[in-house]
Image 1 (cartoon, one colour):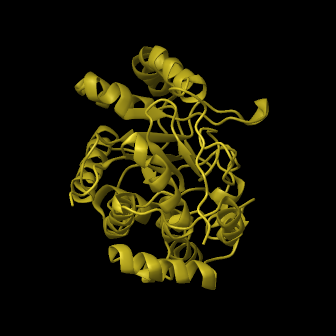
Image 2 (tube, one colour):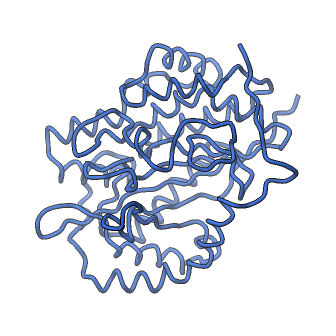
Length: 351
């Protein structure tokens, strides 16, 4: 029997931080200049392959720059997707030689509107949509705990996945998979299944383990038992750590894909907190920057002084304004595109 056709794509967001005169680290609209470099080097690929995210929320807290985003082309294998993602990181690093690239779901001072995440798109034949969505939903708690890199909330250490617990753009699974702000959706614009819940993952080996597991689940021929109520109950573990039930699912996933349950016991959230307490903010952010740029946890000496304001204005003019028509069209499609035939429904599978 031939393996079912599966395509994979990845979008990842990362904070780019600069240090001000007072010593604090913040995002800056100067990052638009780097995104503009990417855009005009290859407009066809980077019109849709890059993005900037603004900080939403109450008027007093809105900012034009939050995280920046890159995405890969579509791939048919997790190995080639990983290589593509690492290549895209190198391209972004060359375009932004200054500024600390910080692959965390939340910064200590973040709120529910100032977040970064990793989104994986899975493309399958329409007749397999229910099967693959349910199989991914069953093991989504395992994949999410593997990605944990958001250990703060309200400026203090919190659960390993504080972004997932608080972000405005995530939430429990609903009856309608097309509703955008939930952890696992079917996209109106692309027709793919999108894992929206994952935190940023800088480690190539950890990311590879997640991608291989997703691919294996998407290729399973049979529908496994799953329910929204079970997922939403296990979602509560994101604030505390994996429960015995989640670890049992990790064992099942190991049998399906070779996934190592050890990834759940050694999280980036724990490593970041340990480094922060032992070495401080600046050293930890610098190590995360090296980790994202090179794949190795180390300070690579990236300059990160706060840039002059004119760089933000220049970047806005050369990146944000040219992309605005595309951005508006994309947002409209993501929220309002009509699903072919009728509103999509995905049934649960009982044990």
